[in-house]
Amino acid sequence: MNITIERADCTEFETPLLAVKIFEGDDPLVGPLAKLDERIGGQISDLRRRGDFRGKEDESLVLYPASGALGAERLLLVGLGKREELDPERLRRAAGTAVKEAVRLRVRRLSTIMHHAELIDERITLPDAARAVAEGAVLGSYAFTEMKSPAEPDEERVEVTDFVILEKVEEKAGRIEEAAHVGGAVARGENLARTLGNLPGNVATPTYLAESAQRIAREHGLVCTVLGREELKREGLEALLAVSRGSDQEPRLIILEHRGGAEGEKPLVLLGKGLTFDSGGISIKPSAGMEEMKFDMCGGAATLGAMQSIAELGVKANVIGIVPSSENLISGSAVKPGDIIGSHLGKTIEVVNTDAEGRLILADALSYLRRFEPAAVVDAATLTGACVIALGNHASAVMGNDDSLIEELREAGQRAGERVWPLPMLPEYKEQLRSDYADIKNSAGRPAGAITAGWFLREFVGDFPWAHLDIAGTAYGDGKLSYQVKGATGVPTRLFVEWVLARSS
Ligand code: BES
Ligand code: MN
Ligand code: ZN
Image 1 (cartoon, helix red, strand yellow):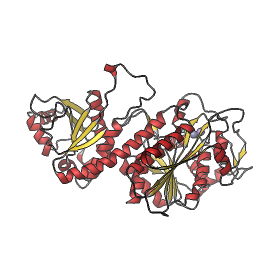
Image 2 (cartoon, rainbow, N blue to C red):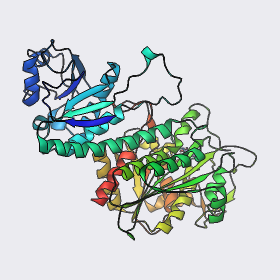
Image 3 (cartoon, rainbow, N blue to C red):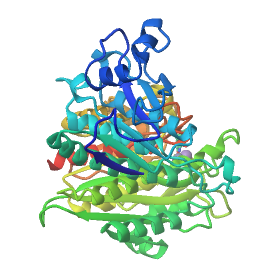
Image 4 (cartoon, rainbow, N blue to C red):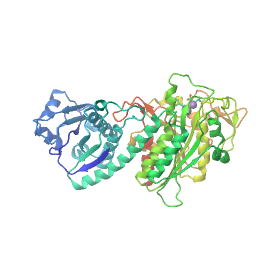
């Protein structure tokens, strides 16, 4: 999707579809909305008076202006909810709604206005609004079609190729353009993460993820390093190797480097779980819903997506993305409950449950990444079912060893519309990981399962600020938000990029 800014008047501009956003309640129509309303004989105010269009969030309605009344062939009203509740997320959703309507109407070209005078007050700046609108539009245009046969021409999904923001004032147009460029890049990274997440386990193998990382590096100017089985053995990533032992697919450790900061400046590190299919191993999962475990690499997918966005934006910071990748399967050589394995750090681990594999591959990556002397590390992983029980699908859990980093992530998540909520890392929880036979065991049972998983990771973290995001409840879903579809959400790509941008500004 191309996002462009046109210096044109919205009543005159020729477009198959013009989308305008309207608040709930009886806010008077002002500015361009009042002008549009007048040109179509007061239809908008009439609809509002009758209560046929209330302006509620996600509400939308298409109007067909009399011929010649407007440059636009169709006028789409999109509800924004209450004025006093306006935030970037509402605009992201409104843009998603508009793009989905355009797809339904089989319209390839969609125009809109920023309504700066009416919408934007001290609650939200013009650049924040423009960025959110661009994100919502690009995210809303996403569809996962890679694995379907082409449809009949008349049933084929129409793609919205052009998204045009109309702004007459030059200075404003410039600021909108800059912010929309950021939003577009962030959303394209998130859409990439969605596709990697949605691809099935037989396609998106560790080798495939590594090849995708190499392609991203080639196309966007990143440095990519991939460790295969032999290198992993040489480097001693024994926990990652143990998890992959039951699989015919070779494991990978994927490293993407963006060198946008000064030489010698400590890097920010993003780390993502890249478990391409989690059967549970010998501690096998129930078959109902097991197909969803192709999404167990969504943390890794978001890491790759965020690295693409960061490179595209030329962020002025050194950023490293790391993805340990493996399958968790079953064979005569698979790791068994009770096995005691080594790790990159040297700690011995009693594997009491082979389904607690994510923490094993992340532990090795956390230990390995010390060599980069990170300024801070944030990992994202579909790590525990317990997290889904604790927070459901509306927020990811955040834990870590540094309160100010956790606060930074909370704020970045709020701005990005990918919220995180802290769980308490009380030292007492760590006791549950004591093993009778090894240095630590990999599962501490059901109580506080998300926190004990966090504590397991923490035992492998070096001397740097670190935070862990459990995205088990947010990485994929039914696609309830207007800018989502069923399947991988791309979470936390936007949060990752937002955090890096905040750190580098
Ligand atoms: N990938 C799963 C966690 C998960 C569960 C993600 C549901 C998304 C939805 C992880 O590897 C896992 O199996 N965790 C176990 C840990 C337990 C054995 C300590 C879990 O949560 O049951
Ligand atoms: Mn598992
Ligand atoms: Zn898993």
